[in-house]
Length: 168
Image 1 (cartoon, rainbow, N blue to C red):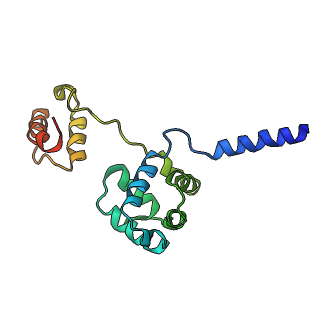
Image 2 (image 1 turned 180 degrees about the vertical axis):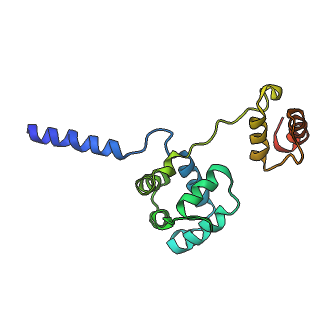
Image 3 (image 1 turned 90 degrees about the horizontal axis):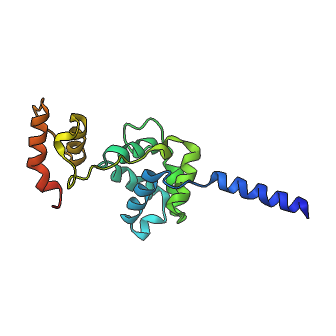
């Protein structure tokens, strides 16, 4: 009886080691969930179609999501390709967290991707931010500040674009 107890405890520890921790693989899970929601039931049953759709889906992604696509092989410039590790389990209706667990075993970088803390434009004093943070705001919006050199020029550009990109 004691041997069964030891075996059970050992089994539980192995299972808990392989599960994802809270907040781990957040980019992976979010991208896969959003991607899955774009697919029809017909496409979800064929892993080859899933791969084609994923490559198309990745073309418009930026920042962390783009990096995730790069790691999986969803971009033309990707050095490796492990799309099958994502598409086959997705075609079997495996949940995103389990797919990300499998992907983590193939490439740990996938689960190291984390979203940056977002700046709350409603409460932040833009004048107190660093230029790199102002550049990040513009980059997140998909905008540029052509010819901007000084902080005041970045601030002016953000104030011009703020109504377009925020709900105040």
